Length: 324
Image (cartoon, rainbow, N blue to C red; front, side, top):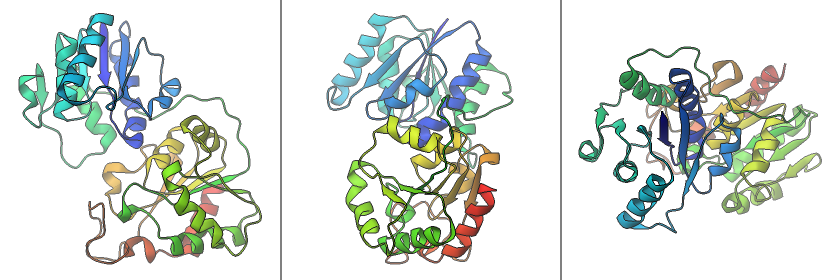
């Protein structure tokens, strides 16, 4: 049997999907498993369980419906697949799966996808994202999955640095420059370990402003814009801990086995917190009537007060407990 999985398009979601791939292997131990990943986050695949094929989709090179169809046909010419699982619930993922010619195509109902998939189900409400993916497999295979973990394989040795990530794609989940300066300064006062500030190239200007505003920069490395995904994985996997907003690096560190303290603004931690409970601590204000919201931009305040009002000394104290 050959199985093809269309992985999610966001870093954090793709990390959480590794549990699906592991459980797929446990359910069909003789099967050969391949994946479709979005270009830009495909650097995560070497840390996944072993795969037969890795198909990398670049929307810029394969634009529109014609590009989706052509890419699916390319996959069909490479290998015949018995099963296709669509973890994203987009129409484009279903079109791609249909074009592969896979005998059974499985996914959640959305955007009129039922005509393209052979087995569709209603997405469960209120569960964790990892469980949403796994329910798809449980319903199709008719078995209950156990011993679920989100685990990325690596061999990086542990070092003594602490990584700090104050970024997020959404304004409602990102610290302001002033709050980030306050938090990093408090962390620098209370811990002796080297600190590493991380951020993607598009976040470099923001992190540079935070770094420039720090009253003391000794022992703080501004690595924003200097690491690709592989480099970020090495920094996170070898860290003593990660202090972070709700973002892709939070899920990445948690799956690499690094203790992770996550500051939640917008977003519901019951749905999207890092999955491995023994390796993460969630910090939430829990004082505002609008918490938790799912907005990408704060609609109640000029800046997200659910993050602004968090106590920096209290955050550092919780991080120190995680380090112990």
